[in-house]
Structures are given as C-alpha cells and as structure tokens.
Image (cartoon, rainbow, N blue to C red):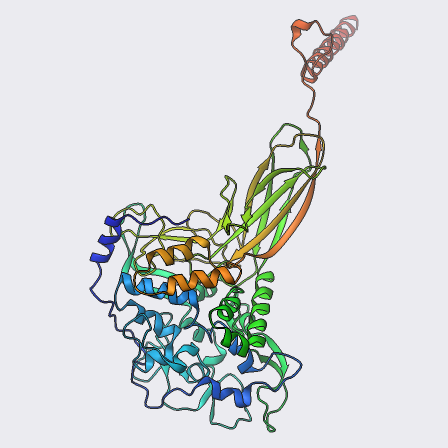
Length: 548
C-alpha cells in the first residue's frame, strides 16, 4: 500500500516546479486546425453494424475500446483532478492525448477537463487517428516519440494502411498507419518539467522522468526485428468487410479496432458510470471486455519447477517460472495501482494447506502481505532533491523510481530509463523462489496462479482522500464498488506434485551402547580393512622377491 508522502518532501517538489505547467511541445497546436475533426458517430453509418454474426466492424470494435473512452474513464478523471490540484495546468498535458478533439479546439483550460463537451468525450476518435501524419516539412525532427506530439493534417482525407480502398470519401495510403511509430505518440510518457532523481541520494540522473515506456520497451525487444508490431497484438485480425457499402470488397487480414490491453474492468466501470452509454454500446463493451480477458490469458505462461523429492522436517525449495509473451514489460503502461502477482498454494495429501502466498481477500479487496509474496509492479516516489523512501501516487510530482519488478520482453536491451529496479532478470521470465516445510511423508501439490489487477483499493481510496476539488473521487469509489472492485483476473496457472519421504534416521548417542554404526563409521571401517589387506599383499610380494 502506498503511504502518503511526508509534507516537507511533497512541498519541496511542488516549490521546485513552475506555478503553472506550461511546456510547449512540437506538433499541431490548439486552434491550428482549419478543418475541424469529424464526429466519430458519423463513421458508424458505413463502418458499423453491417456484420450481424460478429463484432468485427471498425466502428463497433472502436466503440467499446479504451481509445473511445480515454476521456470518460472514471479512473482517469479522478487522477486528472489530483494532477490539476498538484500543479495547475498539468492536466492540459494529459488531455492532449486523452481528449485530442477538445485539446485541439482549445478546450483544455482549465486542465481538469471541465470545458470539454460533446465529441470531446469520445476520447481518441476516428478522424483524429485517420488524419495523423508523420510531420511537416517545417519540422525535420518529426515524427516524435511520446507525449502526444502529433501532427494532424488539415486535409480531411482519411489516411490508413489499406491500399486501394473503395471508399465514399477521399483517402490517402499511409505507411505511417502501418507502422508502430504512430503508437509511439501516446504510449511513452515523460514529465517534461522534472528531472528524474536517484531515490537513494536525490541527485539528478540527467534525464526527465520516464513515467511510461511501453513503446520503448517494445523497441528495445526482439519483436521489431521479428516483424511483430503493436497492431499485430492489439488490433485483432479478421477476414471480411471494412464497410457496409455496396462497393466495399471482402478482404483478408483486416484489423479490428479493439485496441485491447489488459483493462477488462473498464467496460464494467463505464456501464456503471453511465447506464445509458452502457445500454447503447452493450455489445461493443462486452466485446471489449472479452478481448481484454483474451489478451491477459495470452500474455504469460506459468510453470512450477519442483525438486525430485522432499524430506519430512526439512525445508523444501522450489521455483515458479513466469514467462512474458508480450512485446513489452508485463505489466506495462500507467504504473499507479496496476500490478501482477503470483498466488502459490501448497497442500499435503490430505488437502491441508502448508503454505499460501499471494492470497487475495475478495471481501476486503486487498492483497494479503506475506514474506514470499512475488509482485510485479513499478513504484515511484517524490524526491525533490532529497532521498525518496516512500512510494507516492502523485503522478505529476513523482521523480524517483523506487522499484520496477515488471518482467521484460524477449530479447530486452534496456537503457538506463527502462532497466529493472529491485530485481534482475536473465530473460523474459522470472524464477520466483518458494519454500515450504513438509510435515509428513506422502505427496505435496503445488498450485501457482498469475493474477493481474487494473487498479487497487489503495489507489482508489487515495484518489478519494486527496480530492478537495470535485466529486470525481467519490464517484470513482461508487463505480468501483458497483463494478466488482476491479477484481483480479487469472492470467495463467500451473500445478505440480512433489513426493515427500521420511527423513533419514539419525544414530543415537554412543553412550547408549548400541552396536549399530553410522554410514560414516561403516565407510571408515571398510577403508581401514582395505588398507590392512593392501599392506598384507605388499609384504607378501616383498617376501617373494627375497625368496627369489
């Protein structure tokens, strides 16, 4: 559980920052667009509702996706309020990615989003993505990675990765939309105001705070070299149509617009937050949840590595291997409240629990602490130039990475800002050590389950307690309570059995007069006998030589 940062450290962090968070970043600026973005709802006319058997249509899959709800996500809104409290104006930085329609139209001031309206709440909409371009001739450094430094064309023609579309509107074939560089726009996040600091000393590390590095993690893995990009995993492939118009041909290898990650709780939370939205988009939200669950259950494998046997009364040690199958750290992205952990249960032949690590109490929605608990998460603290020892949820103020035990992807070649902290990894897997004490001979059963949770009770309660501006914290708590409390999702599991034998009998003390001997004594006596026999043969050969 994250404890509150002491007031003096938090105050020093705030005082070291400007009064308002105003950092100009490259890209299209507010009120630059001569041609406003088209409402996403209008795209449904052709790109939605035409496949009665499946949910594959571009609009229908997008309508339930995290992209469509990036601005109305109740967890985002609650955290946005705290960000704006901590540093007025900082919320503008968040809205640039979460509500680009409103940001580009100049409705991101104040930064808590209260000026957003209508289409702004549709998050990352159709026209926004399909009018993105790599850059302009005036900016040779484009395209940029991170912080929503995007360029939106004034030309309303729709850009995409589909060659020769039979469209009812103007189109432009775009290599950019076939590239993972487009995803880099928002899936690396750096605090442009704060230097990252060493948590032990508070000294600057000479770079800005690397809050999220999902795209960079992928770029530093083997996946790009293997030709596996973001869309291969996050936009499900299907065969069929992209539009319900008469001219649209059937195609192979199309991409759905689910943009699914691991947030299977969001569709439930959205339906609870706005029942009318939940009813109108029920099929899309159900599909989004199913795809998120599918993604989680394809993201990792679990294997129990047992010894050949154990002995009664002696510590039995074994390992559980968790292998990351994704192209980034597991978990990745927004660090606050997001976690993964192992639950390991050991039972004897009678079904009695001898060890239980990683138990989750569903009645209190809390993860029970234990000495062998194996967590996978990133924890940040607030330094402000002093040592940072306590974790913090103040997203706009954190500047020291305390721990990062998330499992790296295959072939990971980390830089200083992506290197694990607090645990080292030899590959895309973790070997989690465990120990149990067998109490009787027989067979032990080990059950290991990997769990993922989008957000924790601690984070939700913190967002409630810190909010002094609006009702978003209490709204979130109500939604969280009514939608299953962001219940953990089982990602993978494994079972193994370990035979347990009686411990070797130990000899009683010599004073008992027992004639039994230990194995060591028997081995010693045998050695003496062999030495005597060898000496006798040596003497006999000597006598023979003398007789000759």
